[in-house]
Amino acid sequence: MIERLLLKLRRRHEVSAEEEAVLRRIAQPIKQVPARTVQIREGQRIDFSTLLIEGLMGRYKDMRDGRRQISALHISGDFLDLHSFMLKRLDHDVMALTDCTVSIVPHEEIEWITEEHPRLGRLFWFETNLDAAIHRAWEVSLGRRSALARTAHLFCELYVRMKIVGLTDDRGYEFPLTQIDLAECLGLTSVHVNRVLKELRESGLATFRSGRVDIDNFEKLQRAAEFDADYLFVDPGPA
Amino acid sequence: MIERLLLKLRRRHEVSAEEEAVLRRIAQPIKQVPARTVQIREGQRIDFSTLLIEGLMGRYKDMRDGRRQISALHISGDFLDLHSFMLKRLDHDVMALTDCTVSIVPHEEIEWITEEHPRLGRLFWFETNLDAAIHRAWEVSLGRRSALARTAHLFCELYVRMKIVGLTDDRGYEFPLTQIDLAECLGLTSVHVNRVLKELRESGLATFRSGRVDIDNFEKLQRAAEFDADYLFVDPGPA
DNA sequence: CGAAATCTTGATGCAGCTCAATAAGAGTGG
DNA sequence: CCACTCTTATTGAGCTGCATCAAGATTTCG
Image 1 (tube, each protein chain N blue to C red):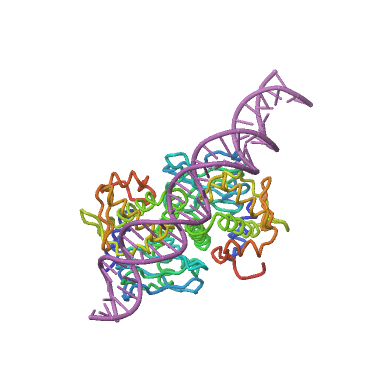
Image 2: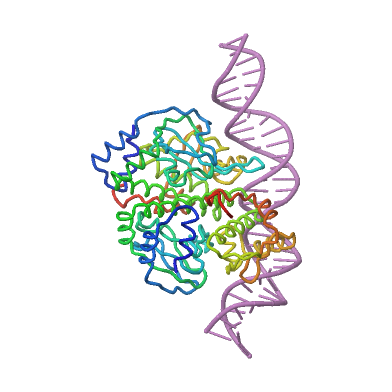
């Protein structure tokens, strides 16, 4: 069940057999979370982190007027809310965007790991730093990219992230979000997202349809997005 | 020299006398950095973190067309680039926005601290998580707030952060950025920032002039910004 | 199969951008 | 201390990318 987490970690660091065993053990109790379920509410004290085994989750903030901004997307293999180990509560809500399979890992376990397996503890720190790097990339997108480039950038990022954990095929990847969800990631309205998707499709860059992203031409998409995967810290190694 | 770092840390956690001594020791070599100096270039391998003792620094990304997005601002007492300890290189540039005084802390020292003073290591992890929380708040601003609310939000955030480290007075705080810098934080043009500042001033919310933010009415400013300081994880305690 | 959510497209509006020109500082060298 | 230059601030006029409003088409799901 934690194969994707291992793929993700090993893409950047060594993970010993012993450490792998530890991870397998703490990832034990498996839980199903139905789509559109709020997993964690802003401000709520939490004493666990979540290993996302299958599905998509998003962190978001609702505004007074009902609009929403998603500040992060998580995919299979992501260890969510590791930062809550230090922060003790979240500054935003977390929702399952699709049906999800998760494993709930008590902070005590993480505490224990940082003490007994400090190298693994470091990897957890790395993961939260990687999340922060992705936040910065999103800030740049939201602040300076056009709606088209921003959308293209998101598709590129998820292509790379999905590929690392083996969730791409030669055409693209499953990405079962609604256009409304996309709009909430991109700081746009769903109406405009719809037009942008049309343009991406018609100009042969990428096709978002029925919960999939199919990339027609990654080079072109990347150029349109001004995308540079460096911020994802994928080791320079075999692609 | 590290009084502001201590204020910041102690606002959220206990720091023992021994830990304080350790921090004082590693913060030893002091260096001046002139305004507008690029401290770290994107991609460059780095083996040190930076304790900002005095001044303002920003992380930013330049776009092909010359526009720029600042993704984070750092003030006195911030321990910059702690994340580089794990990431080993940065995904963006860092620049001194004003004349700065810094202390360069080799990663070896941080390594040593995480081993010998694990509680301090935890505090460093906390700091990087706090940076991430601020990133998320900026994403929400960039994605969903109007130019006015976004500017007001930034002024509120910095008021709280500056106050923690004792850099506010009863009117406001020193904030020697240009309107161009502000625009680069806010995802706006400097022309529009100028107009927004005028509106903030004329509606009695806040005045940005000659390198200072003066807050006319924090309540009103906060309401206009839809600002909620929770994401800064200031302990619920004496304000 | 019916209801609700999502998608799609058109028409129109406006927040923030671009272009432009002037004013006001802030260094710098003589 | 002034002349010169360069950067920053200010304001106006006009434009445009994305929002809003609206209405129908399609898909999803109970």
